[in-house]
Length: 516
Image 1: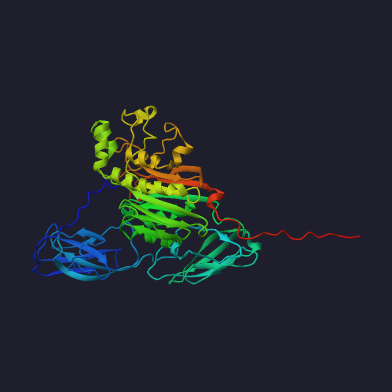
Image 2: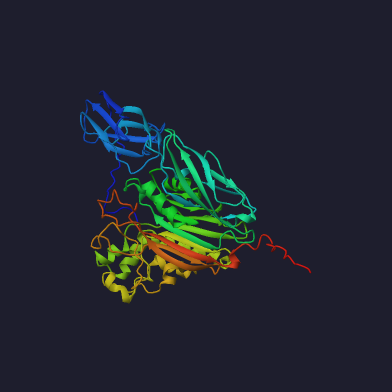
């Protein structure tokens, strides 16, 4: 769901205005990130300072709206500190601009975000990689798990629990090697990182090592998460996102609202060492190779993932459907009829979006026993499986309503994973929206979903998740949980039809016989 009640973003508009007077903008590198001193002989309440990617220039029409962070600078002279939840260390370019427009008062000004400058730290204390398999080359990257510094640290291997010492660690944090039969089970590696200031820290890395005949993925873990405009409204959101996602031990992750700051899909994939595919405000992260970008409408990202080569694949969608108007508001606050709400669902764009997505998925279903299909995302609408006569007291007195966003995926042959495992919405509502608002402001509902299709994957468990006890908006800045949705997780057993067949013959050791 897009932000509704917390922030009404004020986007400076392009205005015609000429600056004739002297103005200055200076970056104060001795203060916290993004502190500026400024002066101008033409103060205005709508003068502002904008931070752009390095080298960007608002004189260029295709760049002027690409600013990352900004703040008003209304006085004749003063100091401003632009508060950001998180940003990459590195160089940026700042400008002092006039009256909500793009006329330069001063700039460009070089800005350097130094990142972390104290003792080096990892975001997590331990991390589990994708599966390895004996006699096959393996690699995983853990360098992105260091809290970000301007100068990258160097890495080295401290210890390796395997019997054959098969693991190598490059100075860039690349773990590699080929496990042997004797290494079956779990290899635990300790990796040390050294910062430019000489400080050191270690990370415990767990590598599951499978027999040569085992499928690379037997149980498939999936998570979907709306990360709330890239994580813009919770301090240190990147670290909190990485910490949570790493804790899920997910094989595939669907993300929504991956827009700035920091192109969140790419930065989270880099941190976790995952493959990734980004589209608009959506991203798909995978431990295993993404081999095909599938055609999907503007509301969805869709890919083919090879879990174990061509003989074990899945199709994975993540969707972020239109958010306005919002159906529960229409029922609960505007007392609309079902017919009116249905018309408004179409007006929001959700109905045509989900119809198109479901139509594409329906064409994949004949092969879904071999190539399971998954649909995840923030649908910005509830489910007909949740809005029933038994739950009407939880939904403003409205009983059964056939929400289009659930009607069409179900009609295409998909199963709502959570509702398949927990059919009673009265005892297991699965609420995901919103942990940051009281029910009087935001009707509680399940609007984030994981669907699956085909007999190639059997649902084992599914649940909404959250870390900590978040403060309500607008006091959410220091929450441990970095978003305004709960996430959803699901675990599946892949069936033999969706798995690669044995890749080797595991011959037992010859028996020893004693002869008299």
